[in-house]
Image (cartoon, rainbow, N blue to C red; front, side, top):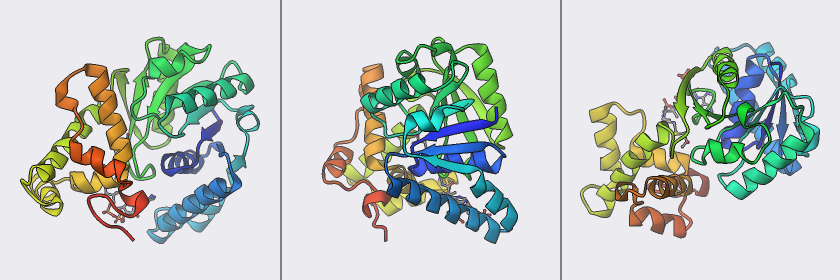
Length: 282
Ligand code: 3HC
């Protein structure tokens, strides 16, 4: 594989484009508006400069990486020569369905399709296309340039060849791929989200203040970020969506979202991206 298209330049998409380009792949980043493309490219430039300042890469590595990132405002234009398409658009099945229909109409029949979804069933997304054997989940973690894990999720019909190709590819990015089968929340969010939800229940029930809940998990369990700051970092709306997927998928009350989380999302307090969640941000 040499050419990769990344659909969506948001937090995850720009990070995914960054790591592919840094590992020598030609990347086409597809967005719906020029201002979104400019924002994504600015973020990549800023994160590469941070790596230059930390002497992890040279100034010429940064320039070469940026030169390998091309952009497109149209899916058909952006995917036509790609070996792999990684979709990283918002967590909405209808939007992803529409995107994969467009992607399939322009991509080669050999192209592998991957979704960076954090919660939507890979089997269900694969069924939108005519190539479920070449469809897989490639779940990256935020911040993508830093986090080592890629959770590789097999849909019901993903072929062993596709899994092997994507596992090998993730290693070429310097990541550690871990396979999982399609199931609500996969492994990562099935384990992470109940912890975050329980931390929110602690605040809701007055057991401890947000900063104290986080301090317990940072100092007692050596987590780099407390669960509430992490929830703000991920986005409280995203956490709620994932908990709902777990709750609906397993029909088990242990996954019911805390009413405080629902209330905060309804109030538009979504975490870092809106400037306020459990904590305030500039
Ligand atoms: N690009 C490149 N490098 C970056 C970066 C970025 N976007 N963000 C941070 N870094 C680098 C910094 O330069 C620094 O490098 P150094 O070790 O050489 O000094 C290093 O990462 C640590 O960054 P900082 O010193 O700025 O800050 P911290 O030490 O507080 O670390 C953190 C920040 C890496 C975000 C750390 O707090 C952490 O690991 N937090 C947990 C993150 C996590 O759990 N992510 C998963 C979220 S779940 C998810 O994404 C799945 C979804 O489905 C919900």
